[in-house]
Amino acid sequence: MDSKSIRQDFPIMSRLIHNKPLTYLDSTATSQKPAIVIDTLADFYRTTNANVHRGIYTLSEESTYAYESSRAKVAKFIGSPSADQIIFTRNTTESLNLVAYTWGRQNVSEGDEILITIMEHHSNIIPWMMLCDEVGATLKYIPITDQGELDLSNIDSLITPRTKIVSLTQMSNVLGTINPVEKIISKAKEKGALTIIDGAQGAPHLPVNVEELDVDIYAFSAHKMLGPTGIGILYGKSDILNTINPFLGGGEMISEVYEDRFTWKESPWKFEAGTPNFADAIAFGAAIDYLTDIGMDEVRLHEIEITGYALEEIRKIDKGIKIFGPDDLSIRGGVISFYHDKVHPHDIAQVMDWEGVQIRAGHHCAQPLMRRLGVPATARASFYIYNTEEDVDRFVQALKKGGTLFG
Amino acid sequence: MDNQGDEPQFDELYRDLILDHYRSPRNRGVIAEPDVDLIQHNPVCGDEIRLTAKIVDGRVSSIEFTGQGCSISQASASMLTDMVTGRDIEGIAELADSFRNMLRGNEPNERLMEDLMALKGVSKYPVRVKCAVLAWDTLQKALEL
Image: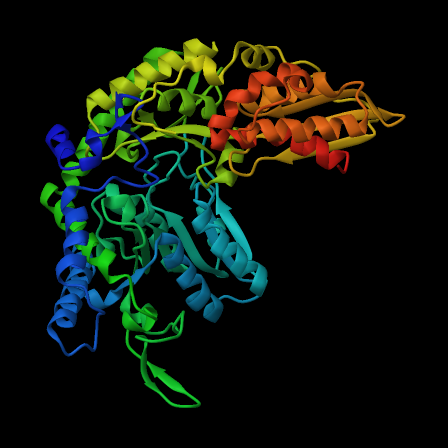
């Protein structure tokens, strides 16, 4: 994969920040967009825009076709057996909340347990905590080792017959750890729990096949994988989606409405009340095409290479820089969180910005994990297909400069 | 702020006095049997400041801080302890108002601000203003100002 030529496809990459070339290292938070995605969105509004479904006229037919084609592309991309199992939401957070509010409220009751991990993003903690508080269930956590991998030594006692939901991230947004989700899914299934994967980082960076994973629910966001903001995906197994009640009520999701009752459509439409965000969903289709052309195996290979290079270069700088997450690149995505014993993460990010290097500093929406790591915050650099070794070099130079200025 | 053109200088934000307070904080510690004792966090970034103080006859007779966070938040807390020691409650309220006013980008009262002038550059960095005011938030809440 040639990340230098890929970079040319991203208009924002020609921007200067404080007169320096843009070094964008925050794709874990959101990715940049290739011209084809931006153009697809603009072209749709210029040439095709009309509300989807039920329109008996050309524009609406075209719009509906493009929207449903995007759904089919998403299904194919993650190996979903059918497009009807792909629900468009706003983002991963909404996808997870949808399950918590529907399946969760229907199936979890007092004394039950929900199992997550200590490395979860708040979006895969809070919906379950709210559910537990409401129904009197208990939220439990799979711990991590000091290397930042899941500690599965007590997994058999953590998953019990009372465990109703097991939900975990495929790849940590802080540690970069790629979790052995298949193993946990099969353990959870032995006890009859609903299995959920937060694929917010997994889908953009790893080849994913939901059928092979045998997972019940898989959630992710378009904007972290070259698509526009405002589009999330909820994949579910048919037998799960068919048993859950609608989440939001309104137009689009109904079949028949009377003064005193209504019936609803099948999945996915029963979960898509109101005018959906079809324009962004259609632009997301262009992002999926773009990633498919590159190939997710290639994406993964590139990230192994660039992360390996970055880890090597950072380790050369200073013994005072602690890097979190596994050393083994086969279980690590393109995320490097670190802590400098002399320079606070915010000060590092500030100084780096002046060099055009855009990194994130803070708790990364993972406060329980920060506590486990024993730090108030970390600085985090993350990589995607458009990042080159030059980006890593500029990052390392800026990091050295920061260390000198505060040292 | 035009991020395309300008090239910020390190010392416009990180003045020597800030780095000096960051590296060698004043009044760092916890006072035994304090009259006020309060911890505040910046939920956005996890920065934390704890202030303990003795109040005698409506004046801060001694004050110490502990906490963790970036250079701006810690230096600001250190400066605060220097500035409010010996000052009465009304004087602290006036100082805090004036400090906040400066961080909103308004011209400060230099005579009143003294060393706090070093933090003037923070006003150009809206995200960092919260770091600079964390200690003042803590103090004002502790003193119920």
